[in-house]
Amino acid sequence: MAKNKVSLIRVLISGILKKCPKCSQGKIFSGYLKINNYCSKCNEDLSVYRTDDFGPWLSIVLAGHIVVPLVLSTEKTFAPALWLQTLIWIPFSLIIVLYLLPVSKSICLAIMWRLNMKDEEQ
Image: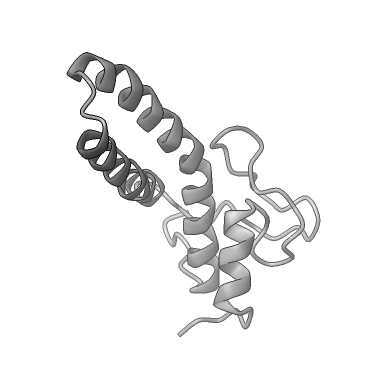
C-alpha cells in the first residue's frame, strides 16, 4: 500500500514537469539524466529510487505512438521517396525520444516515490 498521501495526479504532473514528487518545486535532475540525491527545496531523499529501464522503455513507446501515425499518414497522403522519409523520420524519432527520456525517467521516479518503491539494497 502506498505510504505517501499525495494524489497520483499531482505526482504525475510533478513528473512531467521534472519536479520533486513531494514538494513539486525542487528540480530532480542535476544534468540531462542525472537525478539529484536530494531535493533542493524539501530535502527529500531521491537516491533510493532506481528508475533503470522504465524511462527508456516509456520514451520509446510514447515516441512510437507519435511517430508511427505521422509516418503512415505522410505515406498515404504524399507517398514521398524512401530516401526522403529516411532523412525526415530517423532524426525526428531521435529528437522525440531524447526529449521524452528525462520526462519519462522523472515520471518513473514520481510513481515509485508515490508507491514507496525504494531500493532496499542500498
